[in-house]
Image (cartoon, rainbow, N blue to C red; front, top):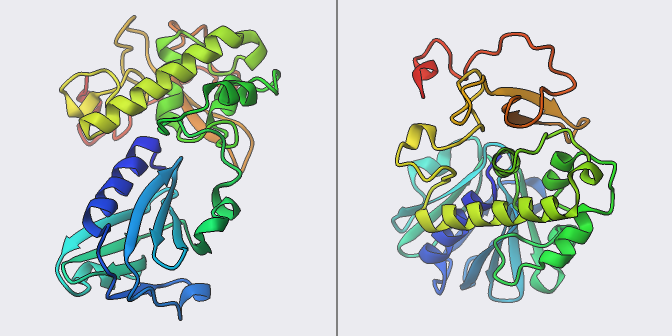
Length: 286
């Protein structure tokens, strides 16, 4: 699932392509919006809210979307829908006299009044990429369930918005925190440090233009633990492992180093874990 930095970049791309332009037409391919036409309305702005996108147009309307696991928005040059708009997975097409925006495999698509955006994003906690990020409120949210694992607390968008498995796994590794430790065991000071590190990494990734964790120029392996299952830890050399955390439907996976982070997951039997893409050459990454 795209994380806060990827959604921020998507919003910026849509804003640059459409802001100030009058939409000549729209094709919203979900049943409840099938007869809706935004043509004639000018795009005011496109902004991110956590992992959500808010496309505000004239007339007090907001087109809300969420990328979920595989969704994307692409902007193409042209004055009419492109071949890409014909894909059966496309859920939204917007066009001006010079740009075509295509929303593919979107997990959510809603049209709400701008004054009622709280209906679709009001449940979210403080946005880590908001310049006015309310750190105190985020920390209060994270510590209100002290018995919960710190990873689940960080991933809960109701506590703070924008963190996914990358920006949970990486700060936990950098601070040597066991992903299955409870919020109480981690303590408020370390929880605050995790939040600050996650925000710093997200902001840096937005500025660089891609998700970057280690700061290395190696685009293939720019992470400490995320996605590196079966590979040596860059700090200690032990093997990075992955395990599910949380209950369905919120269950996710978290990557960690048993040596640097205080042991394996409670559900990890210690069996061999192969690198992602093993057999295609990806296991050669270091």
